[in-house]
Image 1 (cartoon, helix red, strand yellow):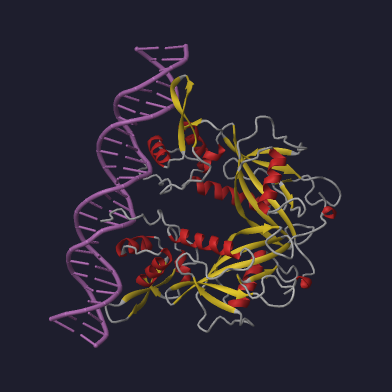
Image 2 (spheres, rainbow over the protein chains, first blue to last red; image 1 turned 135 degrees about the horizontal axis):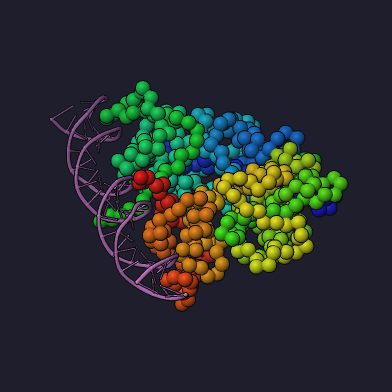
Length: 237
Length: 237
DNA sequence: GTAATAGTGTCTATCAGACACTATGGT
DNA sequence: ACCATAGTGTCTGATAGACACTATTAC
């Protein structure tokens, strides 16, 4: 049971499924694997991430925040644990464990070139399709992340973290609808959202070719759970 | 970015929060740390677990199932991922990651001595108190496990996995109530539980000093989500 | 019968969905 | 005035909690 018994340690990586809304559609950020000799899955797309650096990183979360900041420049994302995947076969280099995170960000205005990242690309998550065949078991990881996202959208304020600082209720509703893939009733949406008490009206109104909309901002950065999920449609006439 | 760059790998462990109901109360299984020289937290109680064995274990889940079987003899527990904890400071032996699982079992009739485990003990989880000061950051892990358990009890069939093969509805309700720490309405409980369609009546009745109760068994081993959580009390007169 | 618990029926408060209605800007 | 979208009011169906009621056994 002592450390000396441990002959071999698994590889340890951190990977992040980073989501953002671009042009009204949910996107995930992927990175292309290097093509050097001995690299696993050369040229394939993968979730951003990599080995834990036991010198630089004080914790797994610090590691995730570092990687996310390196790739996107975003410093305060919504970040939660997604899960872990570990086994002998998932990485040809050996027994490996990945601790996967789930991040929601507001996409940086410039392209996502916070660092040296030219092999970085946003991929739309259309329907339930995976963007491409991903490296390692990242297809599973991304699938789990999408499941988590869609499930939490039913009963939490998650999509609020995909919004810019200022937004209107119809804009927020559109994001809910685009992730859920179905329309929601305006009245019910407004009632439950405002009752959940995580939005604060600003003094501004969003002007357009119609009646202006109240602009809101987040009151705090906590995830709020609604008392019930959106009900499945009852009257289907 | 290649493997050769990795000078040091973190330690990788798997730990399991194993819960069971004993004498009507929720218990967690803990193991006492060995007292040998160089051992971290000698004599402290900890969650069962230990290093991943890259020779024996095909995956993290296989590792968890192996450890659980070694400690309890139970082969088909309810098992889900709980989360991961990793950092430089949590284990004095070095930068370490633990992948923590969450298991619900029916306590073996004999004491929990499936293996060589004499330093193994069930601890009641009274109120929200931790049983003792635990080794490593296992207090945090156990706290998270309890939170998860209590939260899921509000809106899933989780407690069914703490029941023996055959049980009655009042028995199941008692388990819900003991985990939640509050009474539930009998009628509402029956309606929602039976509507969720994961119980199958057997031909047996549980006899006692009163009207016999229908005995049920699980229809399948999937976790069922109720459409809503138990509502907070509305009429509090 | 009495005690005790299992199980049912009924009422009501709540609330989300449906949907029609009003409000308010641009053009 | 007309359009388009923001925002509100009202009805209704579904359902969980409350709680009283009935059912069935042991004694």
